[in-house]
Length: 313
Image (tube, rainbow, N blue to C red; front, side, top):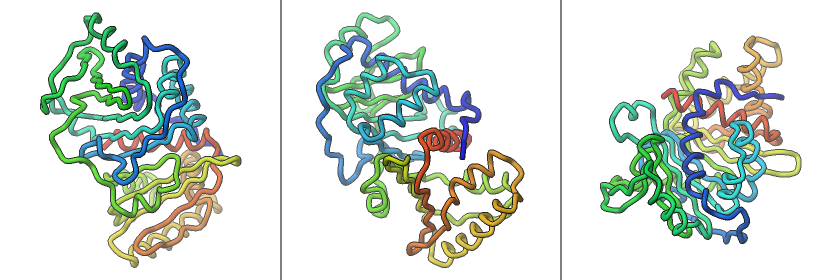
């Protein structure tokens, strides 16, 4: 089953901002690097990210490297410098904020926290100091970081951590803390996501001509690579078990409609077929969807679709 990259231009600007910062972070670093030591970010994996995001994503870089390289290639960002950045990065966490907030000056659209080893702090600071496009800026918290107004990219770097954003990389709000069910559901995953803004679910169902409203309170996504592809699971939290069972009944009808060719849009049918490759189930008050084997290209396309939906909120 093939899922392509629709409307890449819609999300290209977001990805380009993050990767541009990565380029500037490492343009003066050598290509070779020692192996990165695993950074322990157990417990609250989003402690360097503030509340209010539409989505929070955590990536263990080494087991996810082939997927990352594939996505970078699709966006034409597979450069030596970007590869070096991921060579030095062990774990990364990113938050994406609603587009409505971008109407206000200084509003944050994304924040990336990268944890690794031997980031070139002194060399990069020296280079940025002599670059007229970058200025040392003082955060609202009093800490200092580098800022490129033209590129709308902010950068803070320590030897073992880097913060990259399109706004102030520091914050005075409280740190985001994922629910306990998220940590249990995603504890063994290579890539995990916590989606907090779920309007896109009902919008997607409306485009599929399915007249229902999903009573969702949270969405967790877990992905782990193996020899046959990627194993991906979705946990949709609902207010109670009755709502979860009702969704199973509805999605079973959708699954049958797929086999009968009821959904005419091939992209929507491919997307729904991927999510419903196995029958849905219930775990307490949550709906569970499992996809046992997804090729990297299909998973990358799924990520692109999700970014598009979140970008439209």
